[in-house]
Image (tube, rainbow, N blue to C red; front, side, top):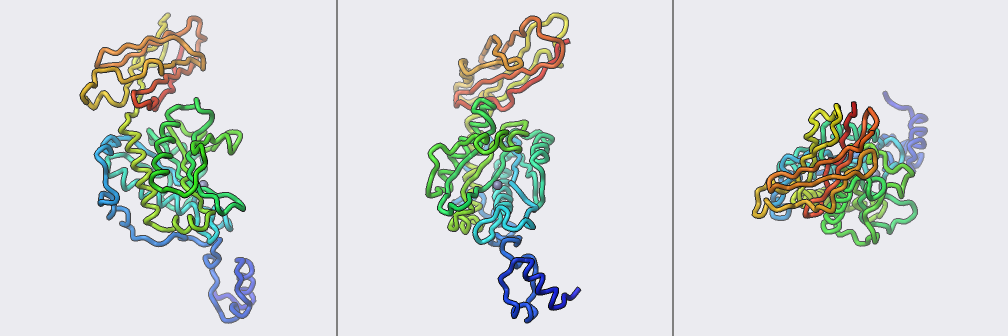
Length: 371
Ligand SMILES: [Zn+2]
């Protein structure tokens, strides 16, 4: 439908353009995209195979230790999306959208991870809106080992600000493996992006921002962290973040970080007795088999204990309980005494430990039923 001049003039004003009335009268086409604060596709265009053609090249080589990512299930969550119609929302000074940066970095990161053998799921492939709960549920339903939310930072009235932060949920003890993931990611970003300034403690609790923390991290059921790699409100950084080569550099930094995290071993626990997690008939113990994330590699010295004994802590319903730890050179066994008189019903048990690289167990939380 053709707009008459009057309607066109109104459209000019509504879209917030500084076009003169003369411009309107000249019949200049006005679309919502003409307002940089409402525009989409705000990044420098890159061919579809931009990352794929570079992954594995000299500048973006796959290090041998990346093989330890094989089979690790990593859910990448590009922050925001579907929000271009909110004028100026999560945009840099010239209108570059954070949602687009996050998505491109996630897609490039996937290219690296897949080559290394990791299994990867993105919470969104397109410019769509998802709630925080939906994002966390996508990761949980897919049974992700790691959940990584990718963001870039913003601050009002402080265009000079530009530094890297990585965020974990809650207090430091909430889930120790979150700190491992966050620490590796942070070191990777500091080395890879070399953003010119630094905040002196770049690992941050999300409780600093909100009373309940970030919803996406609070709802995460697995090891999770959130990166704020740099500030798109910094004019120079905004321009770098439009550039596919810089997005690839960030993705590579995150990839190397995840590979080093995997190299250090991703410990896990499994409840083996009672196998159905039901305590009945006067039974008094739970038995876990621990995996240090390293022994199965059968490297020289793998029979030696690679779990730090003093790092082992077991809690039932939040209270520390006694345990016995055994290592026969093949298997680690953790026997937990269930306190007498535990009420009939559901109970939570948390098993914490670290391997020799001080990586904490990925899955410390279990439930059992007392009949
Ligand atoms: Zn964000």
